[in-house]
Structures are given as C-alpha cells and as structure tokens.
Amino acid sequence: MAKNLENAKDQVAGKAKEAEGKVTNDKARELQGKGQNLLGKAKDKLEEAKEEVKNKFNK
Image (cartoon, rainbow, N blue to C red; front, side, top):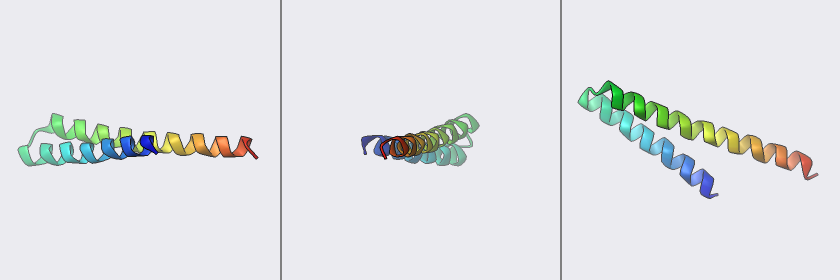
C-alpha cells in the first residue's frame, strides 16, 4: 500500500512540475515533470506485475 502512495505521489508531483514548466515556459522543468509522472506509472505497472506473479505461484 505504501508503494502505491509513493507511486501516486510521483505521478502528482510530475504533473505539477509539468504544469509549472508549461506556465513558465521552462521546457526542462516540463520534461522533468513528464519523466517523474512516467516513473510513477512505470512503478505502478511493476507492482501490478509483481502481485500477479506472486498470486500465480501462491495458488
């Protein structure tokens, strides 16, 4: 559960940085935000895959 919150935090922070970059016309900040958002999404997918494998072997 804590991992999910951490991943969500990465996604929200990434979106905020991306928006900040767009507003201030700072392309580096915008890309940093996009990267952090994608990192959070990738972590979510990894956690889902780990749970799926774990469930398959625990049957």
